[in-house]
Length: 344
Ligand code: PBG
Image (cartoon, rainbow, N blue to C red):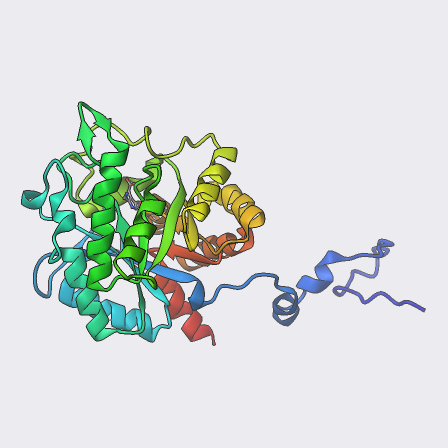
């Protein structure tokens, strides 16, 4: 007959419950838990966002992102080599542009020798086998901190797309592998794909920030790239309303139709329902960005002794996997990779 296995030693006084199913049997030891685990995090799931600044052998902590620094180009290249050694497949670059170089139209974005382009070239020299992803948006370059061109307080769509296309070409020319438009203008993915193809960059990919919400959680990032103080107003006329979910599917469908190779949802943790719907609806390579504010939130609690940092970090990343992500852009990437390395 069928003899149930006792999950644990029992007090002989207490009669056993007549249970056919005892869920705890699969949880009783580390080896059983590992056997039945549905999702795992590997280094292949990580994209590491980094902040690049001017200077030589220079680093500056970002106050609202404990453990994150802006690095000069030489140090970024060294960190990229470390990322490659840790088997992290891809890094994402964001510039802290000197305020004197910021203007109304973000013209520094089109300078083939700007910080991002110099960083790409240095990284390709020192770590040729790691993927390099670059944000396409004007906010690190404009005096007003918006992602596009602005006239009488209105963000112009089609005029912005024309500039963003040129920014994408400059980055591709410098050696960028993945163009990631984060500006949320309509039609930019299609316009960028067309321009890349026309210029012969058939192998340069597009990861579309497809469902990007107007979020409070970008605050520390804006400190890091120096757009927090200058940003006039908010980004609600182009980034999505946090109340919407069906609209995210329409955004994703459009970006796929326009030629996106990969899809991103952003922010991450408050939007895992969107990740799940996007993954189930389209079956595309789907990524989420665990943004600066999510990182800051966890780190602030850790610094207060309120959370176990390592466990909170790993649990947050497995949450992305469970929701259906193929990968996560996360400031925890090097620490996750170090932890995984020491586990195996
Ligand atoms: C630029 C951009 C932002 C982020 C990534 N690309 C800020 C914004 O849209 O205001 C945020 C990333 C983070 O918070 O970590 N368009």
